[in-house]
Every structure is written in C-alpha cells, then in structure tokens.
Amino acid sequence: MSKKPLVIVTRKLPDPIETRMAELFDVQLNLSDEPFTQDQMADAVRRADVLVPTVTDRIDTRILAQANPNLRLIANFGTGVDHIDLATARQRGITVTNTPGVLTEDTADMTMALLLAVPRRLSEGERVIRSGKWEGWSPTGMLGHRIWGKRLGIIGMGRIGQAVARRAKAFGLSIHYHNRRRIEVEMEAELEATYWESLDQMLARMDILSVNCPHTPATYHLLSDRRLRLVKPHAFIINTSRGEVIDENALVRLLQQGKIGGAGLDVFEHEPAVNPKLLELDNVVLLPHMGSATIEGRIDMGEKVLINIKTYVDGHTPPDRVIMDWGQDSLYS
Ligand code: 8YV
Image 1 (spheres, rainbow, N blue to C red):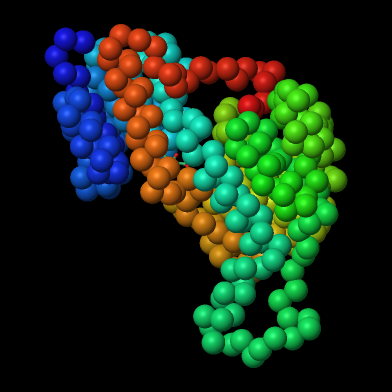
Image 2: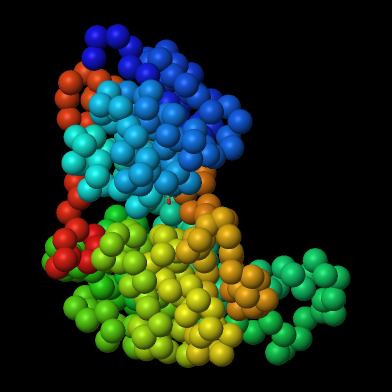
C-alpha cells in the first residue's frame, strides 16, 4: 500500500491507542462509542483498507459480500473471533487478526472471582447489606459451599484455561480438564491436571465447571440440555468465554429446578440481552462481559492491534493472524 491505508475503527478505543493509530494511518474513529448499525458497517467495509471491529460487531457473509477489494485486513480488537465469518473472509482473501495472550491473566482472574463468588454467595450477601435487612451474624446465616478440596473441571485448556488451573490449584482445588486434544505432559504435570477424554464423564464428576473454550461451530451449545443434565445437582458452572457455548435456556431451567447448584456468568447467549429469568435467581452471579476489562489490558489489546496492522501494511504476515483450524473432528483449543 503506497498511500496511508484507511483504518476504520468501530468502537471507542483507549485514547493513547487512538492517538498512535492516527499518527500511523489515515483513521476514522468512532468517538460516540455507539456500536455501528448494519448500514454503517456496510459503509465501513466498502471504504476501509483495514477494519478494526470488536465483539459487538457482526461481520457476517452479508456484510463481507459488500466489502471492496481494498479491504485486506480485519484487525479484531479482542481474542474471540466468533463474530467474524472467517470462512468468507478467507475466500475473499481478507486476513483476520486478533489479540491473544494479553487478556489471559485478567480473564482468569475474573473466572476465579466468579468461582469464589457463586459458591460463597458474595452477591447475595451484598444484596442483604444493601437492602438494609441484615440482622447480624448467625451460626447458620449465609452458608455457602467450601471451595478447597473440590474438583474443578475446566472445559477448554488453552491459555486462559491453564491460567485458571494455576490459580485454582493455589486455592486447593483439584484440577481436571477436557480439551479437544490432551495438553503437553509436562504442562499437565505442572498443573497437576487430570485429562478427561469424555466430556460427559467429566461433567458428571465435577463440583465446579469453568467454560474456557472459544465459541466455534463445534462448541456451539457444547453444554447442551442433555449434557447439563449430567452435572451434579450441587455443582456450579462458571462461564467467562462465550454465552453460545451453553444452551442458556436449558441452564436457566435446570437452575430453576435446583438441578444445578448455581452459575457465574460473565457472558450471555444473546448479549446484551440477559434472560430475565436469570435475574430472579439468587444462586447466580451475573456480570456484563467484563472478563478482560482492565485499563492495562485494553491498552495491551490496542498495542496488539497496532502491531498487527503495521506489520501487515509493511508487507509481512501479522503476528496474530487467525488460522481457522476447527474442522468436523476438532472441538476447541
Ligand atoms: C473482549 C473477549 O473484551 O477478547 C475477547 O474475546 O471476549 C473480551 O474479553 C472483547 O472481545 C473485545 O472485543
């Protein structure tokens, strides 16, 4: 590209990142931070050389069909790329990059926060205080479930899953995992993690489950109604990955029926809509997709986006090019 490429950014990014971007490229920022409408998105793909979307944008076949041949790079601000039709992007010769690694620890922290909050009833406790109804300590008041000594089943043992395992080990949980392939034996030994080839069998044996796999065609409703019914009635389910991995209606039904002990959800199947029935349940902790929401993390993500664009514009393969590697036989990484 001889002239400065036009980079269109769909959401407000941290100021220092926007400043650097404007120095390097010809940039169209979204200062309002309102997500793009479908019309704005169509306009963006018709004009941009590089598009910087986020998880709130749907870059589907219909949108990509309207893209100009000059759109060569989609540099996603975020790790999950399930909102981008990767197959169509590939067909049209568009490179897709993401921001892996820099939000691993923050997301693992949030997983632990939920993993503690749900069994120990943190949100419920705070609601009691805020309602002004607390009458003081009692031997049987606000009893939750002990964490240490319990079995944690991690679904998806990639970077975030492993970071969760490290933390959970320090909290005295025993670590179990299911993944599309077994991790390196050295890593398994370091994490003292037990591999379960059968997700069904693992689900039936765990006290706490943590969803840490990406949403791909193969993991959509991985925790289906049938699988959720295998979970122990006192078990807790934590999800900081993507809502679509769990059949949310089935989860809500089983929570209502007391067939699952509780849930900690940072993500939802139809964000930003939250199933209203979840709001009626006391044994759930609900967060607005803030797993990686730290000031530092957002800067790091922005830096990654900048490096990916710069590398691409300079004619090289960007470091975080997304390789679509999920086939029929593969589940998740
Ligand atoms: C980000 C996330 O905040 O990176 C991801 O995949 O889920 C979030 O933590 C969001 O995606 C930014 O686009």
